Amino acid sequence: MTPKVLSIIETAYRATLEEQDDTTVWFLHALKGAGSPQTLLLRGNAVNYAVRSQDASGLAFGARKQTQPPRLAEDLSSISRKGVTVLLQKEDVERLGLSRDQLIPEVELVGRTRIATLMDEHDLVWWF
Amino acid sequence: MNRFLLMGSREPTEGESARDLYEIAADLKKQGNEVALFLVQNGVLPARKGARAEALDRLATMGVQLLADDFSLRERGITDRRPAVQAVSIDSVIDRMLEGWKVIWN
Amino acid sequence: MDAPTLTFLMMDPPYESARSTTALRLVDAAIRKGCNVNVFAYEGAVSLSFAKQAPHANTVHGRDAQQEDHPNPKDWIAALIAAAEKGGRKLDWVNCGLCIDERGVAEAVPGVRRGSPADFWKFVESSKNTLVIPTR
Image (tube, rainbow over all chains, first blue to last red; front, top):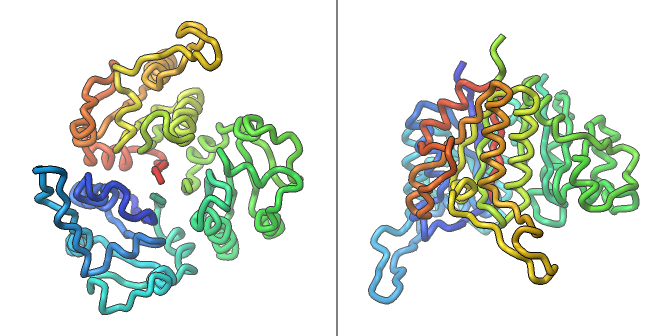
């Protein structure tokens, strides 16, 4: 039986400039490609990944310019199109002063009290 | 009913997520699951008798099993534990994984 | 009856966090309990098995290299691979290939192999249980 996985990401912008990705979102994207059924919950500061206006372009060290900055909101849209349910914890969205129209449309907001139910509903829970 | 082993590796002042773990343990218990909290690394610091850890005591009264890694306790010189916390070997994590508990690291 | 298999994913590099040692303690416990164990090392954890780690002296404590006997995780991993084999089990340690490349740590101790997230998913599907130990 293929296990259903709930992945929770809280830490935001950890090495995302060096990696040009969030490495956990990237990893889950790759796993989805390998056939894993998934739900992704972003909480804590990671809810900011869903903000449409992020722009990490322009990083340069001497003559070495970064040509592929991370595009975290696009990555979330992409993983959603692949069939991953992407959820944001509502309380953190509010805490960061974000309104719904600032976020990509593919995400669904859920309250913190839903986390235990989500854990119940999935076979494996990976809390990154 | 599911069985959950939540692994608390951080002392609650180390971050919101570490505090949330206790709340999620309570929520899972209220939902009728069997829940154990396995404290490891700095997560064992509240296990010391006299530490300010009312949240941990509340979990115990709700029926959440409180387990603490014996090596982490000894490493931190915690010889006098809160009564509700049981010192166990890390093998107990493997036992529960093999029994099919959902094991979640925090 | 076949031995059960457990899978672990770890992310921390050596010498930066307590998590890398706890992760190895769990692998050790699983082997002692007669399990086959899969490890997928992601991000900094690919350096845990880097063959070029070297011990050193500790002048603050007045110990030479031999006296200090400073652990290198690569030796712990090699010992775990040997322990599994001795018990008729297998520790299948896979390092994420892209993570190896970007960190330049391709040389790993014998018994460790290169792989990808697809390997991790195969591990998950074929294991009794999986524990992810993240980095934060």
